[in-house]
Image (cartoon, rainbow, N blue to C red):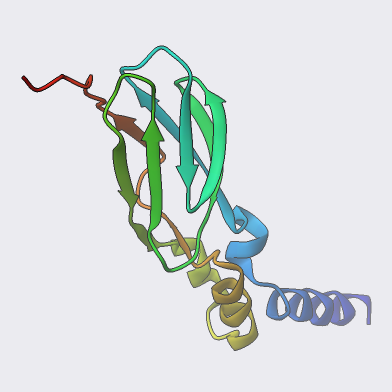
Length: 129
């Protein structure tokens, strides 16, 4: 009796879970670095991060849309970076659990940033004569 209860409990727990959301979360840590040593402003999907110095780590949403990052520093040209997303293979653990797939898709855990590290090559502003 105890063994069959354990099997039923484990099966139910696995079927009611969304693996990518549980194991990897819906936000992923990404590190930005660059050639500027002064403070900069990073704008990530419209949200400003002021007084940032490189290297800078931040969690970004999974989701299906690319993440747009803008780096601005005094005396440097503004640089844009587009972070593409890739499939999070941990989602496969859901197997045939449609509810798990739906939860992972809704939370954005089904996708993850393509890389964990991105580098900005910022160029000084030159005056045109």
